[in-house]
Length: 505
Ligand SMILES: Cc1cc2nc3c(=O)[nH]c(=O)nc-3n(C[C@H](O)[C@H](O)[C@H](O)COP(=O)(O)OP(=O)(O)OC[C@H]3O[C@@H](n4cnc5c(N)ncnc54)[C@H](O)[C@@H]3O)c2cc1C
Image (cartoon, rainbow, N blue to C red; front, side, top):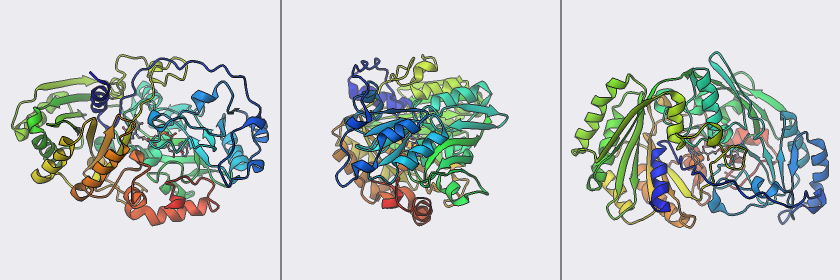
């Protein structure tokens, strides 16, 4: 299997997104000696280098300030997406507490350099690791406590840790596929996963958020306190309204999950897309499926999903799909898993221990970075025959690309479009345009543009693209004005601004 088809396979195996967190060896350890704060990289043009006093920041932190030249810098400065190339932040503050976060905001905010929070580091455009900026790395704030139906999760926890801790208590939270994605970035943008139709988005389960705002104050935002901020933090996108230190979530009983995967003959791919569409439109909430359409002269397909009802009751649903496709699948897989094993399956790390499902950059971790380009659209309605044919035709002109259609509606559609900041409540599905080639961004954008007249102009902020036109309206729709107002209220001088921040929308 070549690298593109391997990535494509892995991406499809992870039904709700890109689970291709492919194992790679540990990075070679750097040998440079610690740098002194006087040797930091030059700040960006127009900034005030004297104003950013890194020595003072280092002295004020309980955690560690990693600077260029420090042995830890090369790894600490890497965004997850290797297609972005090396980043050169001025400093990475590996904070040890909410107080450290407040210290970073107070001492590094508004000093003429970007200031960005980083949880899992998986931002598609690398917004969490800005060149010449200060990264507030919350990775050490990763404590998870489960008490009854409630989980308190530090903002640096990775999804695999959340799944493992919840599973140990017999509880579950709907969230994304990749085990190394951070709870903060994914929740703040919404959080789509294989259990979303059954239980909603990750952000729908947030009951309160501890967040440091631009004035350095720690807020406990909830329905009755800082309610506007609480609203914005549920779908308004990471990095916009402050730095989250901790979430409290409501959880659900951990379900048994039956996973299925069907692969139909390539000549049927348009039929598969249409059939999947109509099947999902009528499906019960316990059933969800991703339809993947992989670029080729004759595009190939795969339908992968989950069923949380009684295992024996899945068969008639699959029979209905096969009948609508009008052809038997070439391959068919079904198996029932416990919750944690199901999440590990979609994470692409079924055969690994939980510690091994971590980045290779942490002790015990084995998962490497990926180089990819991606963008998104939201399907506003099920695809009919002509639409399915035109979508599949887009993939017949390409190679090394895949369209990943994640079913929505079900519990995702229960809140109104304005109840939280996530605006795509009526969307039928999200479609991710993904390529494993670092140079594919123009092709990805071309497909995104071509999809707009077929499926609508919406896009999911967690599958952002730095070159997307009309990004603010696409990500936030009817919630854009309120989001702008809330974010400007909490960050009037724009210390958290980044290229696609609400401060620039
Ligand atoms: C391999 C892969 C698989 C994925 N699978 C899914 C999926 O199944 N479902 C899904 O919905 N999404 C998925 N995503 C998208 C993912 O949800 C987003 O990329 C998300 O933003 C990543 O969060 P992070 O914390 O890892 O990234 P980061 O890069 O750390 O953060 C992302 C953004 O949030 C901000 N941020 C980070 N921490 C904080 C904080 N503590 N407070 C405030 N802002 C913060 C950052 O500044 C940045 O703007 C996937 C991404 C990848 C790369």
